[in-house]
Image (cartoon, rainbow, N blue to C red):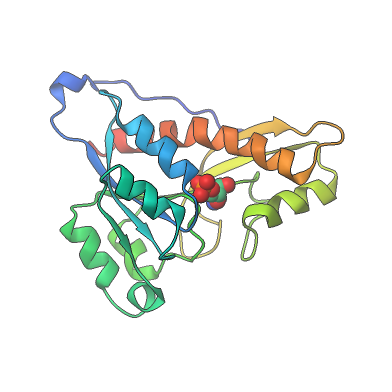
Length: 210
Ligand code: GRF
């Protein structure tokens, strides 16, 4: 499946806009995508602002990044996510319009999905519907692609529903796997695509909400 992304520039004169879409990034790890998304958001004509970073890992690198950049950030454990309204309350209080998953390893609970219909994005480091589902994350994905002998990999950006990696696809981008490439080489090519395209796709979706 090949999807072409068209940036919607209609009536998006920044001078006429007085509001940026407030996004919350959910991440479990180092947060290299969170960093590229944040960097993109600083552009004057971007349609979104990183208003909060949330992690389910108290010592995640992404939380240190948030602190360095003075972005509001918060750790929430399993109970807060799955047995309470704590996360939703935090998102409401922070006036969040849209949620962006960037290496977030838990399933988003139904109550959050209901509050943000078609407003939660995820990125997956493979060409879905292949190499997705529970347990398919990080190096597991790249190892599986490597073992399969496929000649290409890539990344997929999709809306989030209550099943792993199954929400409606928005964008895919591919890279060729060279002969002799290791799973680490594949991971690095895919990550480059992620850093390049994820912020732009977020901006495109945000532009529809402004
Ligand atoms: C990325 O490869 C993303 O596709 C996947 O998890 C990884 C997160 O990396 N969902 P980082 O924490 O953004 O560096």
